[in-house]
Picture 1: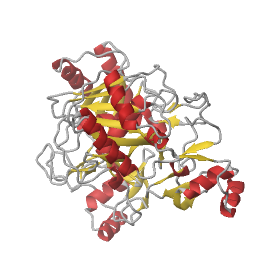
Picture 2: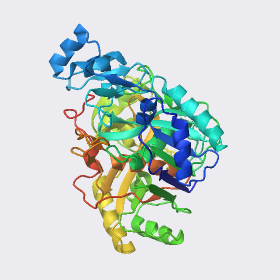
Picture 3: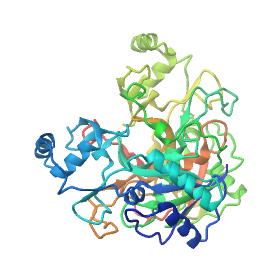
Length: 252
Length: 252
């Protein structure tokens, strides 16, 4: 594996609730005159998946609990936003740095439950993560593979803050038809010594790479095609398997 | 910014202590017949920087403290390795999951102080991180820019485990002549709304992208050229600035 090419789809339209995202992506691939090969990876921003799935919530009309009221007062944050975060979460882990760190209903840990206030069409709207990103990735992979007549791979990506490091990077929220975590255990190093259990989160690395072209503000580049990433076509784990439980987490 | 190209340098030689790494990289770029442009990013694996700088330590001859003896017994780990980890660290943060999580002398938090036991030429040797990766990146950038007659950017990368996520990904240990953390505050989103303080760790994303070609076992691809990443040539922060202190860290 010697080279990789990343191509952002240009002139990608704004996505509205109810849109058929796979048709829009298919049309954009044609408009951009891109050739698709088997196992090309199409990385899609979570935001347009959520928009197509109408995952908007109106922060002015959401029903506010007493708990959300108390917390919003304490943190001086919008009541509606606090409630939306709570609705999306299994539990709040910490608020001590004046941000709300939660275990999301989907299992992972992040700030504000992945709720997006930028790039939404109104002040009062927030955008939630897809209800079932694993299914969204599978449906997009099936539908796009059929339309393109090539078995492609899908990664749905979002940006995330991280412990220990400044700034956000893109990670793989979900994927389909790609081995997301590659286990090198038993592979040999350059001196012939067997490696002891290194697993590489290639889905996250692919998402980060795509993030370089997607940008985070007004780039309108929510879909990136990655060509040249060699994969053997197996899929024993998807990006959802990259979430570790507290018990498995070496840092907790 | 619509496309990125990543190219691994092929036939890269094994690096030995005392080697002039910038000459080796320069020669390899010529051998690979690659054209270099201004602001191309050359991503270099930490491992070959450490090897050139002779950052090997012999775990059989290292002087073992009582503290290291006790800890190695408790964790059933090699005394020499435990001592090497302690020597490289400001403090041990946790050993509760039977791994040694430290604050490295360089400031960041990781398992085993970034000490490498794979891809070293003898069972008894371990490879430490470069003594001053910031300076290594600067020296490589200066020297390669001169040789190539183009002002290129350098990222030195290593793989790391992460809280909350399975598997390692590559991150930027150090960099030179590249804005590592891009602040989007004040940029507008697609609806014209100003963004509130999103910072993007582009150096980490570039490192992750390069990691896809470098591999972690016996690929012998420790240098990756990234072409097409648009940067304005400013550098108000380098990859070292991506380390957050406990006080700044939203998750601690």
